[in-house]
Image (cartoon, rainbow, N blue to C red; front, side):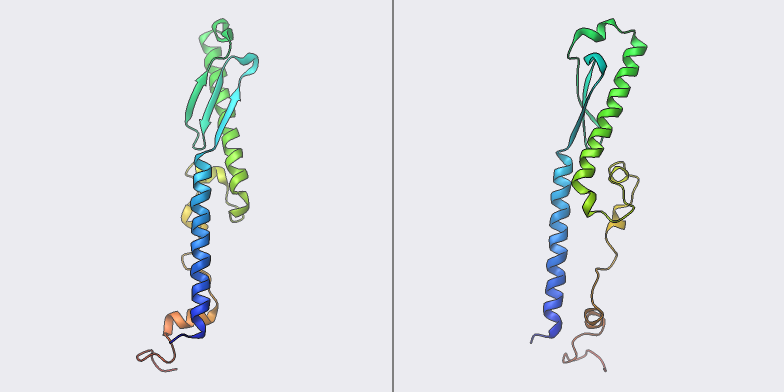
Length: 146
């Protein structure tokens, strides 16, 4: 026997499944993000993934040969930081509309935010559905007094 609550429960489950599928797709898109930066005078070019891991370092010109080791190190580190910022910005563009206010994409990607805070412990549901879940169907044996 169906109840008036069955459709509401089905709708809530469908919404949950849609949100979950969107989260999986967003994660896939984030994993595909890269950020690239090139130092002045094309001394070095760095590519990083969305997590900030360096995936490629190129020396497009021979300009690095003319730099002292300390200066080359400084240029390389600055370029890595720029590439990371670029990747975080790109990831943020993919996800900014789906995040609750105050949730930063950068914090999520750097492990500084709690992902469990993105969704409530309990799904949002009308009071009638909560009552149904807690007390059972009115016509169901053993559902208790009403």
